[in-house]
Image (cartoon, rainbow, N blue to C red):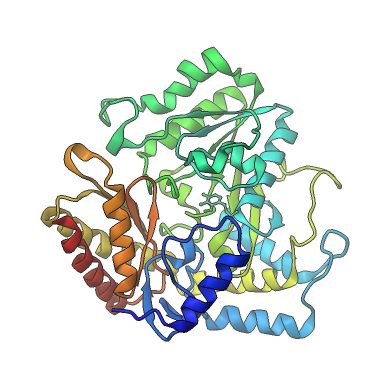
Length: 427
Ligand SMILES: Cc1ncc(COP(=O)(O)O)c(C=O)c1O
């Protein structure tokens, strides 16, 4: 059992005085970290099953990333990359192109910014003014990205929106159309044509369909392959661009560099961020030369191509490849899923276990599959007291997204803590 000491309490108290709008699920004041373990300012240690929301795929305090960033600091921290040329961001972009198969990159600093760039590119290229996105989806909180977001009302209340119509995601565990896969014929995807394009929005005004390959914040929802294939067909038949938001799912989290590869579908524009910087703020929007053909002045920013971010990002991508993190994610993911499936047999509170690679979610439920939101929150809160960092998602989901470098011992220890906490909550 951890002991929250005076150092943590002092910082939390001061934080509450100056920080606005941040919702922390529990009290954890971090000090340092190594691999998959975080230490707080009072000396408690925690196994991390959250990777700071799927950012730290290469593990904390990664030597290669650290050394690359330190070496760059010695030379130059920042240059105006919109005004000058520099090699580190070029090298990073070349690497991103090689790994993704796209030809052009726009660099930024965050997920929302990479989504904004994707949206602007789609509006600019198609000269159309609207988009389709999905209920429960999360794409960020800047106003463009927020227009696509539909995970919680609190994110949207009082904020104006671009013209985005939302459709049903393939959430088969709770089918929004009350159908069963595969007999449903992926009706959720077809709703876009059947309802939205018939009654509310002309496909000729639709610049893009924006989709998360696996829904993250909305509840770690893995759709059937045909869902993305249907979206691709609808896009192709109507001259609409497909934007894949890989901000949370990219960076080998699902075994592949981009999660969409698991579905055999290629989007026209991809938004990436989180893990590709190895902890340094980095966003990247990728596309073909034909689509990303915007001329000088159409889009730019101050910090995109920042030299530290570029050096950190390049070292991160190299580490991911050299260490075969994709293969490791699959192998460890299979192991964790098996252990969670076994727990599902024992504890009726686990309604569903789903995921690909190390992007795994379990949905906690009560009688008749009612989302067990309060119990989920109790599990997450108790786990932190026992030294395990978990993060919630959706209405009653717990995500399992450890660093891809996590060891078998750490996985077993973390799952042991989780099962202990679950046992108490399941009563
Ligand atoms: C799928 C997805 N897109 C976009 C974002 C926004 O990223 P950021 O918080 O870096 O703006 C997130 C953040 O969780 C995300 O999960």
